[in-house]
Length: 132
Image 1 (cartoon, rainbow, N blue to C red):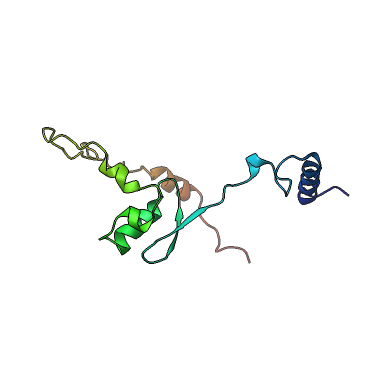
Image 2 (image 1 turned 135 degrees about the vertical axis):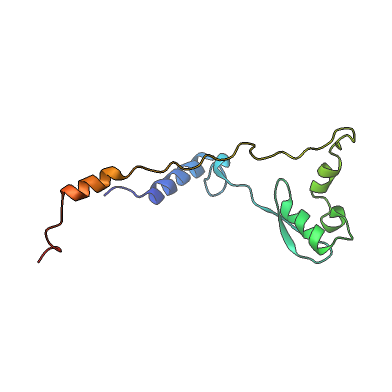
């Protein structure tokens, strides 16, 4: 009887542990997922999952604590609002023009010539209503 995938994986983990490779469970470091970082808001003590852009934390502090800053809510975390604030502003000389989605009108659907269907139906009349 062949081994299942789980049994093969357990055998490989046991061999890794015996060889001293990987962590305590025998998993290779490249296959171990990084644990999620969860920060707690210092004002309302709500846990927020941190990501590369910290979008959830930014939305939390903008909506729940608009009077405070990101650093007061989540000290020591990457501040996504600092990147937006430090971006170069558009010059006042350049006038922004709205971009039209399309200047040409959409082509109208062609009417289909279905006369060939009428000809085929006329040559093949139905004899009865169906199976008896």
